[in-house]
Image (tube, rainbow, N blue to C red):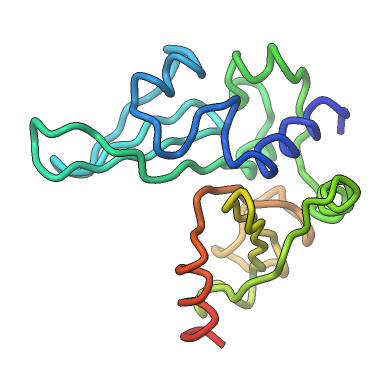
Length: 184
């Protein structure tokens, strides 16, 4: 993996943003940062997400006609295993260069620790707990889901144990506490 793509992941995990786009930013602000090349999807009148390749941003709103409120973003890192081609947004690629097909958690964790950005393991939802581990960065409210075991229909093809599945933000302290109190 090139140092540049690792720098991208380090930037996301330490800042809780994608190139400065926050999970709470309005759709127009995210598009200004990541560019106009996206697929827009909706979930009824109250939910919308934009797929910028590897990066997806999600919004919701109270009612039609009301403004969209940023909910979260997810980097679908697992998509790189199918071939990084168009998966990495052009704006991200222009800044960080080439991306490898896999992101090894151990390497990213080690680099983050050297920069004083620790990751804490938190409980995974029971349905996924046999196959995935989740790690949380409390300062940036970022979470990483990592493949812990292979399972047919449970883990994407092309990933190995120890590969990062996705990176999301925010994961609040309240959600982490809820997981600890109910899932342990």
